[in-house]
Amino acid sequence: MRLARTLRFDESDERVFENPAEPDEWAISGAFEFSDWTGEMLTGKPRQAFANGWLGLESFGRATFVATAQIEQAEYDTLVERLAQHFVDVFGAPDLDAARPVAEDELRFMREMCEDHDPNTLLVVQREMVEAGVSESFRAIKPQEASLDMVAIHGDLDDV
Image (cartoon, rainbow, N blue to C red; front, top):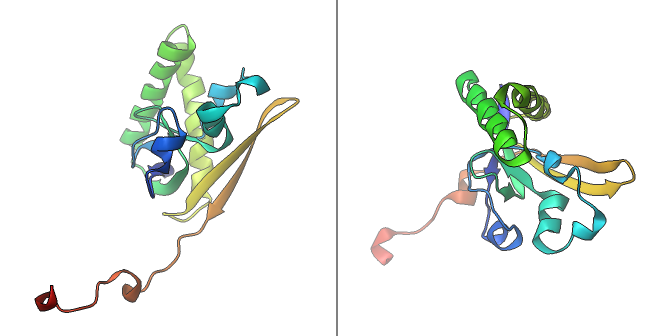
């Protein structure tokens, strides 16, 4: 089974998101956070989170990039419970029993998207406000093969 993990290629997420996700967190789209937003709310850092931020499931911060990765069932089940608790704590769900099916749906959506891609495939999200609410589109960037020459350091340690 696959899900996505947050990536950080540079420090830009720390500058563009109010609450940046940490690298290597499991992540979902998290569009539910914007379900009651209006166009007036889309300014500055909140706009960046809305436009292309994935939701990390540890910090509940945002990341620009995620990559598909293998996840074990026990880890997945823990994420369902963590997200359900988040719905209770932050979004006012009455209890875990009410929140759990919604958390399961959010994670199932992400899992199904990730299953369509090879491991280490980068995913990006783009959102926009439409008359019916929030519209999301996703793009996958396949992992590139790298030869050893691309990552190896050449030289002689005696010269250092």
